[in-house]
Image (cartoon, rainbow, N blue to C red; front, side, top):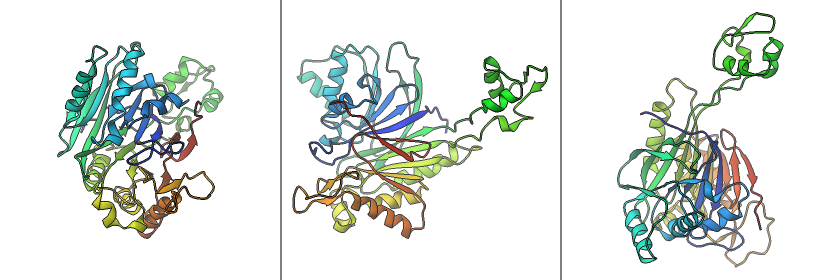
Length: 373
């Protein structure tokens, strides 16, 4: 398996609610992977996603280079048409990649044809059979002046009430940083010499001695492991994704450090409702999501797609619920952490919130976007 990965900078949640939005709390499904190049990948585009992008201070609506739709339930794709139209009215010229299961092209063509047609930028539709696994290369470009790059991703069938695909993205091992202070001590000033030194070339110091990272290994920090980021929603059975992730760990990172696996998984219903209840609607409990994370050796599990019965965000202090059946969303994280402890697996758990941003090689750091109002 060849890999053309792109350096990923951060993960941004734009919508974390299942089925319908909760005004002032959660919008329906959408998340963005921001790349170091400035481009962004959007996974799902529920109604109102463009509003969330416009409110975000960390993402630009014009940075979207590719959109991945997991399935055709409205809470995952009804925002697509407005977003594409807004980009057109803003004068976008570069093509955009649209990836989704069988039916996405018919849906797009039908809406566009019945609402005046399309004479804007090119929309490259990549329609995938949701009954099998795919390995796909697409070209990524979001501004005319930016170079075109290739992104490899994988799509894997998930079990839901509609044909659904999970998406896996790869971020290669990152070279260790150069210790500039140590280089200065060895007589290498700031300038081109530092770049040559990091690249492995021998460089002559100010005293005339030859300096090399091979004879001075302390000049380079240890490399940072690569990453596999899996977005798995909606699903009541993500077992095929586990098989894929385990295979990719070996195939994509042979000869490198073992990668960090990060799993974004839906957790619509709490464990108190029971696994049978969740499966009835094609969804998962936090314990079901934790089982998937444990089996693929994930370093981080991020739960999302919460039922409206979970009324409070993680940061809110408990208060009178909006209805008698409302529950704190913290219950869902506790469910997942309990399941992981019982399986003896060390894996951090995050609860996604609208406008939360995750960074770090294991997406261990969480902050909150300064929302524009």
